[in-house]
Structure formats: structure tokens, C-alpha cells
Image 1 (cartoon, rainbow, N blue to C red):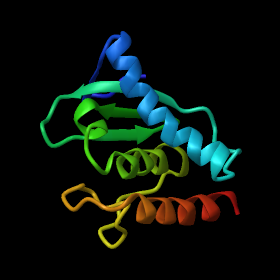
Image 2: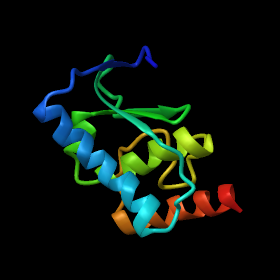
Image 3: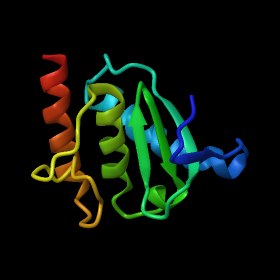
Length: 124
């Protein structure tokens, strides 16, 4: 699956290390935090076609940039895209995790709290 916002990087050692960083967050959600019903997520490391884009998510895919994964708040960015990819969550200016921009970084603790809110709502 492709998106106009991203150019997929070819897989190599550097790309795999970045992908592993994103997958570790997804695996923590699935195995350590108990959301075993999360579907398989395809994670693509990309170069964005626009400088402000950090990632995109939808249809059980996450496209995420190296720049996003090098940020201090990369966990929040991965969880934000995971909410789009699985729960079809829309942007919400009032929710720190689902704001349309990541201009104000949030802590991992807040990111997980908000992710769990959406996951619990989705899985009932």
C-alpha cells in the first residue's frame, strides 16, 4: 500500500533499526499492556513529501519518518498513528495524543493513558 504523503525507504540495516523502534511500541501495546487483539500492523519507514509530516496511519498500516522516530516523544507519535491505523480515530484538538500536530511533545505516560482510553473503547 502506498500513500502520496510518504516515499517508502528500501529495507536495509538502518531502516530495520528504525522499524524495530516503532515495532517495539506496537509490541508493548500488544503483549505488555494486554491488547492482544491488535491486528498485524505493517510499518513502513519513509521520507515525507512535506517537511511537517511525521507519520500517517490507516488500514492497518503505519508510515513513519526517521525524524519522528528520533524525537523524544516518538512513542506518542507511534501510538497516534496506531490509533489511526486500527481504531480509525480522527484528530482531536482537545486530546494530547490525537492532536493534528505534534508541536507540543507529550510524555510517554500521557501517551499510553490516552492510547489505552481509545483501545478500551474500541475493544469494549
